[in-house]
Image 1 (tube, rainbow, N blue to C red):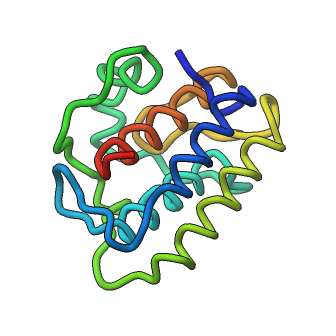
Image 2 (image 1 turned 180 degrees about the horizontal axis):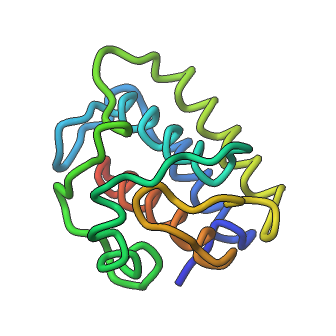
Length: 149
């Protein structure tokens, strides 16, 4: 499984993000490209946070059952449900969102294992450091495939 902590995977993700354009069309789902970038930014706030995010009731009930799908080799299915706090609506500035997401990815990579994910994920609970790297790579990969890059 690829990890965002690995240099090659980090560079691959950055190339793919740079291949996006304002005219990139989704292959599935509802988000426009700039909304997808904002959504991915929101996801990075979890492992990079210095404060604990409360566990969701749904996460406590079923998060453990699907947690391993976040860091295994199987691609995520299309049109998976999104937690309300990670849904993005309204117009977003593509270049701003792309630049800010790239900055968060760089922060995650440069902090490295041992310096991210201080607290449990609000939906899926505790991850090991390798699992954080794999889950964040897999989330980005899912959405970049959604836009054909």
